[in-house]
Amino acid sequence: MKILSVKAVPTVSWSSHHPLNFKPKLTTFGILCFGLMIFGIGEALLIAAGAGVSPWTVFAQGIGLVTGLSIGWATLLVSLGVLALWIPLKQIPGIGTLANAVIIAAAIEISLPYLPSPENYAMKIVETALGILMVGFGSGLYLIAHLGAGPRDGLMTGLQRVSGLPIAWVRTSIEITAVAFGWVLGGTVGVGTVMFALGIGPAVSIGLFTVHRFSQSSV
Image (cartoon, rainbow, N blue to C red; front, side, top):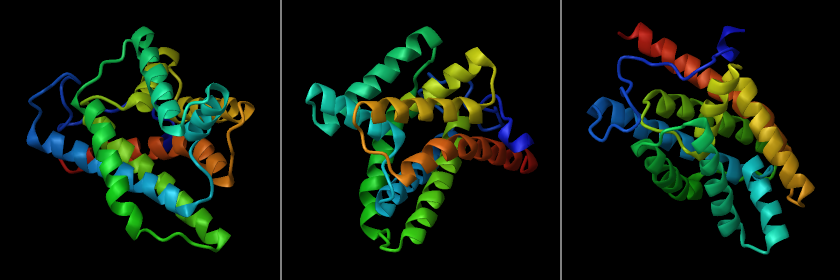
């Protein structure tokens, strides 16, 4: 399927010419912020659903259990480790890298109190699936802005460039690796965790494909 075979982040008319662009077009910056907001609401849906934390949180839990660090500090350590992997992959940060942390955190904080936390397990699964799709679509918007990726998305695009494999495969492999290490270290895995690990790669690919196709048709 074409929609799952995207092999790189597309460039469209509103994409920045370079990640280190501190004076992007207003349209580009606006789409970046909107994409990150959608991303953050998707993450909030995953939290509200309560069907299982993300693979990287499982990994951070495992690191925390081994090192004695709190989940917050363990998450920071994991993020720094991922950023260190950018160096051999020659990934370039930008204002989107900083905005990634700020806007997603704000979107989660603002939206979470208003999102349902269903008791019914089937509804938990539905909310988790919706969250995954929103994270994927938000990723498509903000990555195509080309103003710099977040730590994990930067690892994804860097490994894709080196391997030449479709983004869906690369992202799925990264998430499965993270959850596997986290589980071995003692992290807690839920159904939502497995759904995210297997679904986020295709969701990001769908997001990139959809945004690219819409951007072309609207020119």
